[in-house]
Length: 483
Image (tube, rainbow, N blue to C red; front, side, top):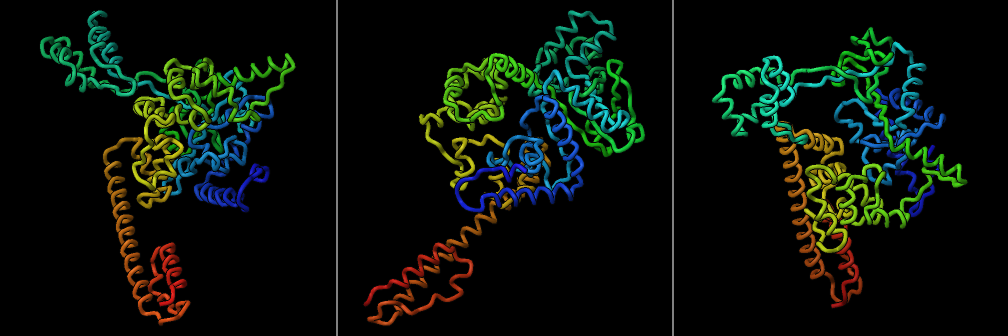
């Protein structure tokens, strides 16, 4: 087991942290009925590694599991990296586990074939996906059926804003784009087109196969879900999409193909032919030469760091440790990327690091006072409002899904927790004041010419009072001078 192989430093018993986390995770996994899922994933990953098929070190919430790390499903120490298990499996919310597993793009199919042969071809299938009629597409399709001219349809479709992160519906476009609203009001043909298109918008347009999703059943899948055969593949496909296939009691496994793993394997093979041996798993995370290249933006071909915008970001922020790389990859997406300039200035000392609350400093210090990771949101809810990590995960999910009803419910819970903590702190402060007053009274009551005060601190003083404050009070009493 990997825990037994660890070489720790510092306090004695440091392995107990791993053992305690491992026991907690195993209990949750068993209670939720998922031991088989973990063992199946560990089995096909082990087979891939034994057959020299590159496997990614782990990504997504599954990297927060010590059990997964112990079974070599992932290669990242979640405790060392501060990752939380509750993001993956929450004991307060029953949900399906979902490991995102990267395989060499050119040999990924071999792993799927192994799973088919091991568990039965009639018990393994890919998952269907449905392409939907979105605003621009439904306008074009409806316009073709109505035999409108291509030029007119194309012109109208281009009036609908096309933002990948903020898709517009036709109704929103009619209310927000003046030119389209004018066409709708003045042209009966356009009005007919838009009225029909709005009724069709959002309906399925075509079917295809999920790029990575595979389901495995404990019996022939035809007994559990309807199937169909994709003419381009000899593997059956479920007619239920990802959402409903889980409702039917099947668990999804993701077999992702990653070209970077193929490139890395080829590079290692080419170097070996020149007598240079490279062990990718043994590479250090603090190689100064690597960070010099990153600071120059010389990252063409580096996974997730090769775009022109990311290369400019690397040059501006100048990462100097692995944590900086993780933070920049997390920040480089619409919305969070607005924090990148401040992150760079704080890191390089040109902007003061400011924390929203003093209690958040241990949580946000690695990202210079900026919320970057979902784990930080969960830990903040735990520290500030007394949430369990399971409850904090529910808050995190509500924030991510942006469903108003869920957000309102979580806001109420957060406020209650914050109010309770504030009252608790105020109570502690009042008890401390009372303790100081009692200490002063005891000093005045001590017998004259006595070197050590014999008075005892009443037991009621210790009840609920801060330990540090009690100790200071005891010290005052013990070393009271002669009078």
